[in-house]
Length: 259
Image 1 (cartoon, rainbow, N blue to C red):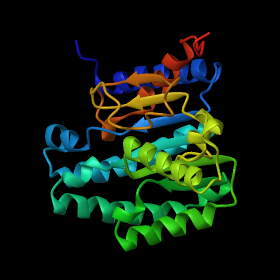
Image 2: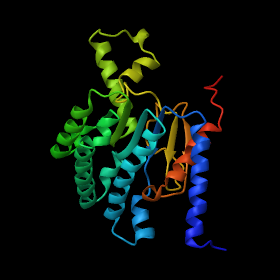
Image 3: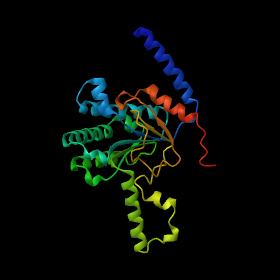
Image 4: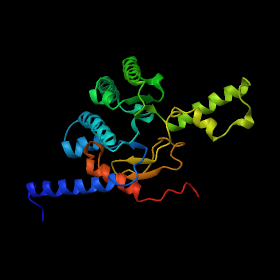
């Protein structure tokens, strides 16, 4: 039996408060990375709207989710905004995503809460594939927040983990060829230092929305000991209560790191 809406809202509110209290009392991940999936399906199945409306709602959810993370004092947040494979989509959709991303970067860089909380914004990926206008927006956002270190918001854009690893290997190979590095000195740390994420700790928790249970070429090297969490909720419909459940799931696991 479906509860009346006022009662349903009351029950939901009480459950959310109880869950939040439980989560706050447990270990909080230092770094959470999110594969934001389901924008287009949300637009079609929930909104009965154009897929671009799904992307717009998804972009709004990113900012909302970032405030949730700040509330829980999560120091590093990384979102998978655009993969290298996404460029295979039709031009109109890619152009819309580029324009959306450009506007979002400027808006977040000028957001009062970003500066009050001293959030550093970084965008990593193959920037050579991005329009000049987006590159300028990235430069603006990174420049305005470069001095901050309390919190870190990282955006993987035009990113593919295999491409990232290949690029790192090439950089290391050049250093060996130029006698800047000896082959015997190459270690896991060497490779990590040549990745886009060299200044970012590996994620404690990787969360994927939309019901897909795969990593999709995201942080393949960095996720070696990450906890994985999958939910069937589409990204634009992802709620605070869904976020809390993901954190609680992380808290209920025992992390042994192979020991």
